[in-house]
Image 1 (cartoon, one colour):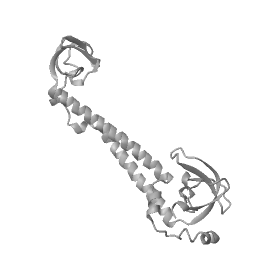
Image 2 (cartoon, helix red, strand yellow):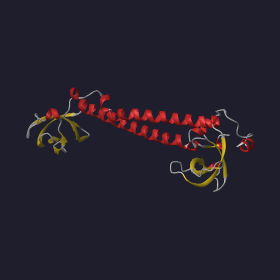
Image 3 (cartoon, helix red, strand yellow):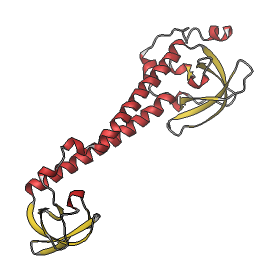
Length: 245
């Protein structure tokens, strides 16, 4: 290991190494960080989608209640405790609603043939509601799906920073070692990078580990020796030294 350290002393400083701007940038795309970063982005997108969709639905319902045309509809069919259908006229046309789930409070109220007041969207007569403002929950309670996802999103973001901190700690404190490339293959989570599988050049262990290297940095060949900054007890956290120098 003394010869290795001497060979690369000019390009790779001895630990503790400075956390340069290049090292900080590179740390964001290391494998352990990238996995959580992609997951955080996916959860964030889903959270925003549900929040937007539920907010728009709640606002549309409120606009329909406030500005919809009042129409008297007849309960044309129903299944007690399950669903009901309405029949009503708009501009001389008879419209039959789809089967609508029955709210618990209406199970004992609705009867077949009963007339109920509803509000209809004049631009889309099939869009209607029999609810009133008094029956609506505060709008934040409509965001149930989004609210449930917020803690998960926060957790994934936290893990991104935890993993990045681990990567930077490896660069700062871990020793420089040599490894022998076993094979390289396409990375499924990063098409522009390659997964490099390797064994340690020193020692008798033949165990295989892997790390990630961008294709633009040069893809090493089988049996090629590469330099890694690697925790001795955990080569799973090895990083390619030249990407940080």
